[in-house]
Length: 303
Image (cartoon, rainbow, N blue to C red):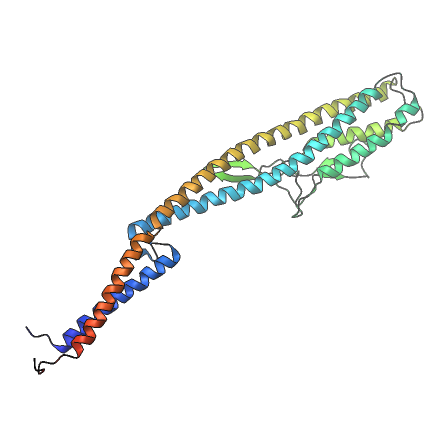
């Protein structure tokens, strides 16, 4: 049977091209360690890897949200814990001030620490983060939580001007946690302290005076209410941090599982690829040798 020269050349060129393309693909796969370079390499596996990549991106976003939330909660909890400790010291002062045996000078000695405490609580309530957002204003993060108005009468000069709206952060599939806090109610303690400082500043200040005693008692009650407020928030933050820590651990396990699955699906078997590459290289060399040998032959050659 005779084969036309054009048919023979076409067949040889196709064989050379096929072998060369396969060698090029195998070389690229071995260089990257990936079995799937384009979706057409394995359409079914490509769809599975794509789904795993989407799930991994979602899980990573949850983890990023958790890390951001954890930092914010840790910082807020630290400030609130400090405020709680200061309030305990202030409450002790109120208990001491209510002792009827104190002389006016003893009561006046309490003015300085109470003033420092009032100013410290006011300053901490208006704490801002590194982005300039107020930590304890609810969702009104650009508004200071507490406002001081010197034009108002003593006892009403401190006002909470944030809000109590929660700002939810998605930390899991259908799971959200509040990332903000508010100190609505702390202004009452600040106003009680303001009145207490004024009452203790009077020359004849005495805990046995009914009016002064009423102010001191109200201030003591204000400390108790503020301690319950702040301590409750600290406890809640601790619980939230435990919850998101467990969620983060679960997300980490899911992420590891996704990565292992993607590796199993898309990783190249180096041994199999090397064997296949060697086979195609041998076939390519044989095709070149056959092509060059047959090219020198003629129907008119004398045997």
